[in-house]
Length: 128
Image (cartoon, rainbow, N blue to C red; front, top):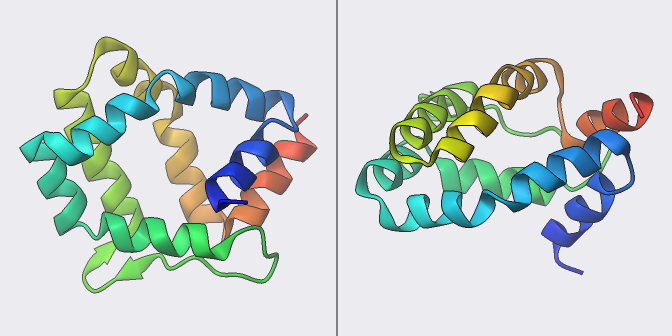
C-alpha cells in the first residue's frame, strides 16, 4: 500500500480526520497543479526544500520513535510551511485560501509540538 493511502486511511478513522480529508480532497489537485505549474509556487517549494521535507515526512510513516527532520540546511520546516502558505494564498483559489486560513495555525503548532506523524495522528484520535 502506498504511504499516502495509509495516511488517508488513518485520517478517515476519526471525525476530525474525516473533516480534514473532505477539505483536502477538494484542494489537493489545485495545490499539486500550483506546485508543478505555477512558477512562483514552484520556486518557493524547491528553494525551501519542499520535496526533501515531504519525502522525510512520508518516510517516517506512523513510527512512534521516528523523528521528522525540522531543518534542512538553512531552511526550517516551519519556514517552508509559512512560505508555501503565502505563495498558495497569493496564487490559489478562494477555497484554497480559506483552507489555509482555517488550518495554518494548527499546522504550525503541530510542527512545533510534534516530533512525528504518529504524535499528530494520536492527538487526532484522542480528540475524536
